[in-house]
Each structure stands twice: as C-alpha cells, then as structure tokens.
Image: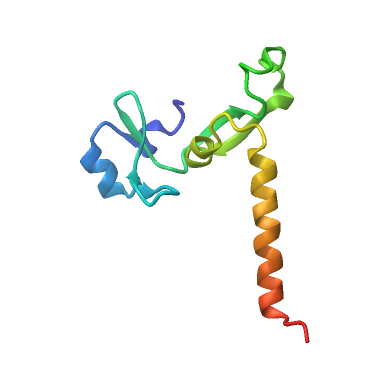
Amino acid sequence: MVHGQKLYATASKAEAIERGYQYRDEDGSYCIDRAGDLYFHPHYITLDRKVNKARCPELLFDFRNLEVMCWKCNRQKGDNNSFEIEQSREFIRALANEALERYKLY
C-alpha cells in the first residue's frame, strides 16, 4: 500500500473530505477509507485474495488467487468469497431490466 500513497492518501480527515475521499456506503452513511492514521481515496487500488486465506491457507502464495480491486470494493467484499459472482448476477439483472424497459414486449 505504498505506491501512489502521497497522491491518494492523507493524515488529515479534513483534507480527505476536501479531496473528495468521503462517500456514502450501502446504508447511506458517510465514510472514508482509513488504515492506521491515513485516509485513502475510495478507488485506491489494493491487491486481494479471491478465496480468503483463513479458509484456504494453501492458496496464500498462489498468484492465481490474487486480484486487483479498488479499496471500496475490497471493503464491500470483506470475507465474502462469492462477491464476484454476486456482482456479476446484479450486473446481468440490471442489464436485463434496462433492456426490458427500453424494448417493451407487446
């Protein structure tokens, strides 16, 4: 979490708000991503494991188990190993609803 840290992180909460790091989560609450005493941009890139290391420690050093995702998505994912599938399902559902709205069936 070092590359780009000066551009996308600050130790000041007020500066983080001024820079636009604050966003609303799913509940509508305001939040700012924080690690230690640093506040980060919500789209700051992190490297995460697809399958949780506590559940499958044998995949700890397997590069195929790594994925790049923004901090905000990583936070939403948490320990949910089916996060990617759920996001794909929601995307397809939204796409289908938009198509049905756009092209009405008679």
